[in-house]
Length: 334
Image 1 (cartoon, rainbow, N blue to C red):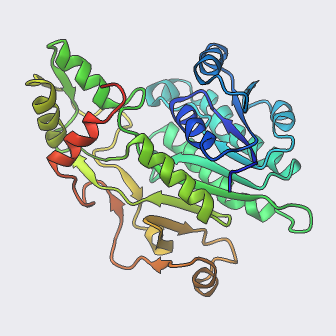
Image 2: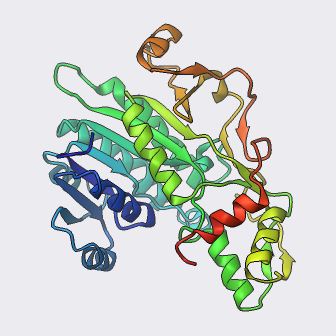
């Protein structure tokens, strides 16, 4: 579905944007537009990729008019631009709302104006029963996207809006594993919030496959969530110690706005949950086409979720230590 298409990625110079660009280039699109406000990262990315199918657009999702011109003749949009560092957002909540909420609305409005074929927003587990401002803004982003299809006039628009939701990518910038490895190599203690803390495992390649799978399956108004295993902090520390040397530990306690476990589907959302193509799908209960009969007719191989009360890292299937060590060993920073 990407061959010969024009694709735009907001936040395209970020770690996900760059990985997604590399993956999409293998599907022979006509062009990929990288939309971001980071001038130096654009220069670095342009030099590193050196690909004539890439176009670099300076701009901010807060600027609706700039988005309008950037989206001209675009077929598919991946919306990955966001402010995401929890402590910074707690201190600067107004800025987060401008980027994560109003910026997302600008993407929706201008995708409709330019009649884009499909628009996918990248969400986070922190949007589920949010405990911090970042999670609340990403929840609103999801709500905007799943409701945006109500504004689609079939006689004027072909646009479909889809949301994806997953946790932190292993090894991505700001994530805990590269930080821990760096501390171990420097013979410094690793700072642990709680040994009982659990997190889902997803590598960048798994995240990309999931996003493209959801893009293909999505018909509009859904939230897709990957089927993942999880790990606890003690297993992670054991794995890192066996790979990089014994890790000294310092327990610092849970930080403000942080959760002990990651939740990808809460107990209320699970009522609208389905399973398809190794993914979970949440059907928007306010979208009239999402009755059970229509869902079963329009999604091949879909099944209703009946056995789960919620989908969180403390109750999900645990990854073995050997599997976790293998994933860590394959990360790019090694």
